[in-house]
Image 1: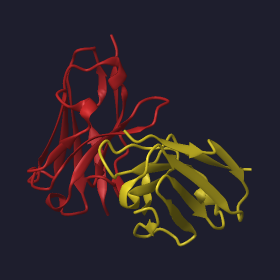
Image 2 (image 1 turned 180 degrees about the horizontal axis):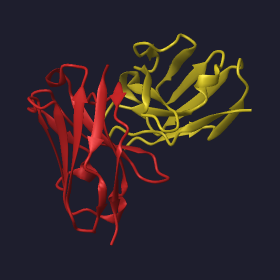
Image 3 (image 1 turned 60 degrees about the horizontal axis):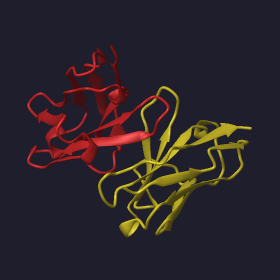
Image 4 (image 1 turned 90 degrees about the vertical axis):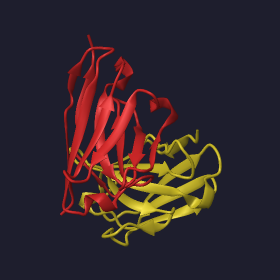
Length: 116
Length: 108
């Protein structure tokens, strides 16, 4: 069955960096677009970015451009999100999900807390 | 950016009843690019409906979506105990792909 497992979350100081990973299994990873989506405490879901199966197409929400970088390693069935210059408002649960603009499978999420 | 407003915020119903959830967009959504998700506590969101009215794979036929333009609905014809959850609408007609704030469907 399809499984997506995020890792890499934790506590980071404002201005710091963090790299999230998502391990995928149960499907041909390289055949699918993948995305990152987040949900801040008490807030709604927010799409961050997607990447095509071959990594040739990458798209970010305007508010995420410049600080976040999505990447993937199809040999390892892995999706990453590099987050730089983190701010308190980046505190959220980060989900990886299969798909580009709709998402049929999601992981359980990993919590990122940005605080001094 | 398209803002999606869901109503009601909380809906209290009993198993066996019919649930109607609303999602209103701040501007028309092209080609009915509207999806619905279900989320239960401690679980990942689950895609229910896409293109406004097409059920995703494995979704029971008691779930149906409708609407166009700026007004969309999710209907659950006869509530089962496992249907009590939070429901989100999401548009994907243009970036950014935004979500509604959610409707909590709770047992009365």
